[in-house]
Length: 138
Image 1: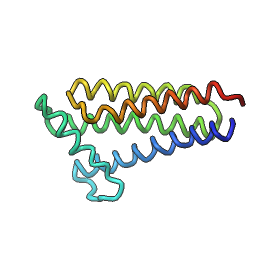
Image 2: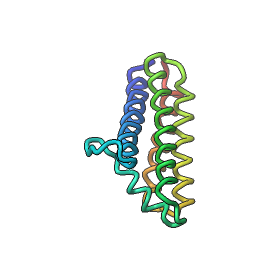
Image 3: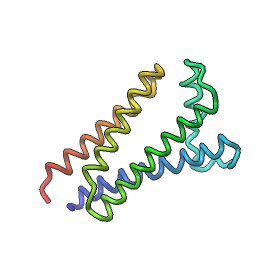
């Protein structure tokens, strides 16, 4: 794999890893198992503010955060496998595109328009990475 391709895949591996870790810390904090501010995403409180439109309680919000953590962890694993083994690059990129598309749909569902642009940008970065991986020569 070309150095630029390795850098791009490495970026996504590290990005998904840090996002999953920070959401794991936040999830543990939200259930009272950990009281740590370092790398705490604060997404639980952010999500509580968003899902309140449908009177979603704290338990379901924690399950939504757990779901985000799970899909981000899968993304991290796929990108690390792609980076270290040179395989599963397309699968990792497809997973990333699916994750960000799902997050865009969720922001629409919960009418959380102010947070949608972040996920659209991540989706565009994923598409840009996929184009670079596919179109740049080896």
